[in-house]
Amino acid sequence: MRRDSKLSSILHVLLHMAQANRPFTSEELSSFLDTNPVLVRRVLAGLRERGYVGSGKGHGGGWVITCDLHTVTLRDIYEAVGSPTVFAMGNRSEQPQCLVERAVNQALASAFDEAEALLIERFKDVTLADLSASFNRDYANHRGTLHEHPKPVD
Image 1 (cartoon, rainbow, N blue to C red):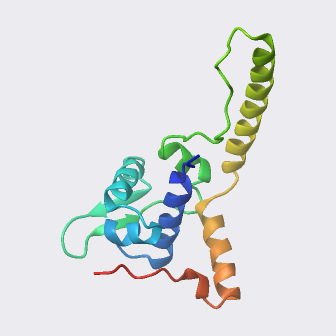
Image 2: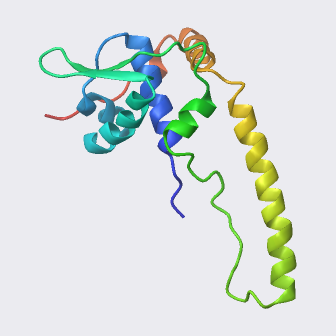
């Protein structure tokens, strides 16, 4: 089953933007994720509407991070990318009249809802600045070797 990595992907590019403190083209950002620039632009457009990023056209233009890393949380970004489904697991619905299936579904739905609520609540405790600080620590400890991305092929 395919996982929705939109939140992880956009956090990845936001940290690159914050670290470099310069405009990035959609093509550059998409190369970090090995994805299509159009997909990156679509997601960033939603973040631009909330004031987290800005964009400029023309020579020297591109996407820049415009928010305060200390106040924007994972939950803010999670909501900005459309609050994707947290769990890939779900309930069966092939036999809705079956009492066993109903009991199982009710128990699982309750557990899934509780777990999702806890996770999303935890997202409020982690800021983009926290992620940036974690990256900076790891970068210093590994002398920068983990930060390299392959260059796009022309």
